Each structure stands twice: as C-alpha cells, then as structure tokens.
Length: 70
Image 1 (tube, rainbow, N blue to C red):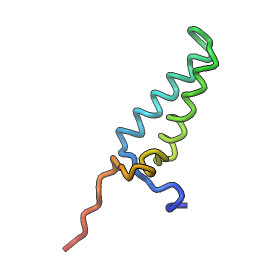
Image 2: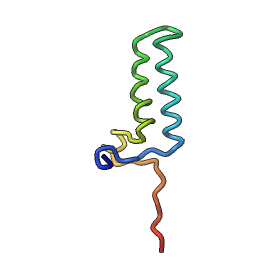
Image 3: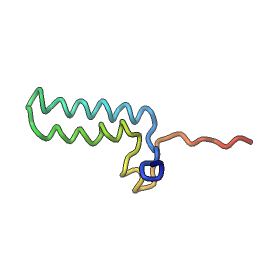
Image 4: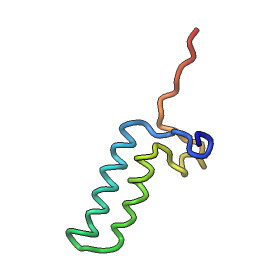
C-alpha cells in the first residue's frame, strides 16, 4: 500500500487539509447549503490518508526526509 499511496504530506499540511475539508463540507449543512461543499471530501481524505496524488504525480513532498545514520 506504500507504493500506491506514499506518505508525502507533513503533519501541518495534513492538519490544514483536514480543517479545510471539514470547513468545505460544512457548507453543505450550514451557510449557502450548496453541493459544491462536497469538494471538501478531497482535502479531507488526502489529509487523513497522508498522501496526495498530485504530489506523487509531480514528485513533490512536504514530508521531512529521514536522514540516514552514519
């Protein structure tokens, strides 16, 4: 599963995605009550999983790189 969904998000990045996802999902219940709020599922799921498909596609990562011991 690590090759399919490699961890490429830092903890802060993950937390921001979860908060943003919950905020967007709240638009389906409160406020304008628009179905566009379901877009919040994308950052919520990527934040919970810890892997962003676009980061993988472009070779990006916000995860700290583990330094090898010498």
